[in-house]
Image (cartoon, rainbow, N blue to C red; front, side, top):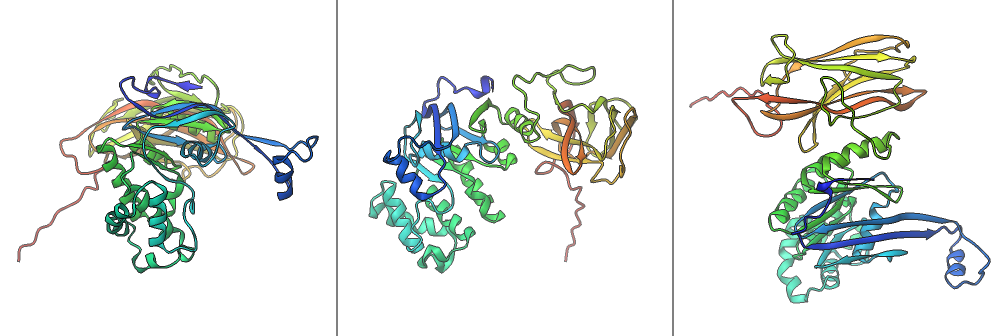
Length: 419
């Protein structure tokens, strides 16, 4: 398991969520009657198969922190949130919460399908400890945020999933919670509503409130989280900075995760480069070439530059793909491409081949520090496979005398016409 200093709670920070050695085991039943038989021990000799959703998981969340939980489907993310919110009881261990929680879990949780939207607002507010008078005061703000019009007076069973999540999130964030817990529910809303929700996240962070959320959107994890917990098949694989845990998660996704993965040192590459893959083919060198043809990691914004990589192929490759990605220092992928997208390689490569790939482009990123990552992947009998990946192998500095808003410059031309 990977854990670094950034994965530990600051000693000066008050813990508001403490998960201690939590395990959750489910019995698997073929028929509803099996659950009854097992619960009341009517057939003590009969054994049911077990599924361990969580295995001895521990972590803490400090007051004012935003912590993300990532992992593949079935890793235990939603289960741990349900245990923290009290929806589920752990088989072993405990989860302690200090503060008023507002939780947005899976679609439908806490809502009565027969009630109207407004009736469900009062139902949820009451369940969260608010008086009717307090809900009356908050109702206009809740309905304005949800923005679903007259549907608030219709039963929620008639809602689309997007309308439902709008109302559920509006309730969750407008009851003045100290701790906000959000599952993947936000992925249902449209892009404009998601943007509004993330603006609310920013507001919560500025107010010093605590946020714990599960998401497959790694860009959001990188942008909003102070720390990240990585789960896989019920185990906690690691806890640390968003960048480190996202890189580790990508190894899990392609079946290349190894305990105590160690960075390798290569000439010309960062000592902190993360490297893995089956090594049927490998990158052997990488250089950044500036517009004057020199090997240079400092590139002037607006100039043309090349990423030049050398590779060796050791076994026949059916459909290799050579790729690069630029990330910012927080770990958010900004841009990149590969030979499949660019339609540069359309056939296999024989084992024993050595080759150089040049990616030539204009530097339109804003001034700042970026990290270059390389991927050498492909398909074998239709299955995606990783031959060699080098994360954060080269630090690239972009020098600029004019930065626009955002990650890159669209090179706009302004024309003003006076009438």
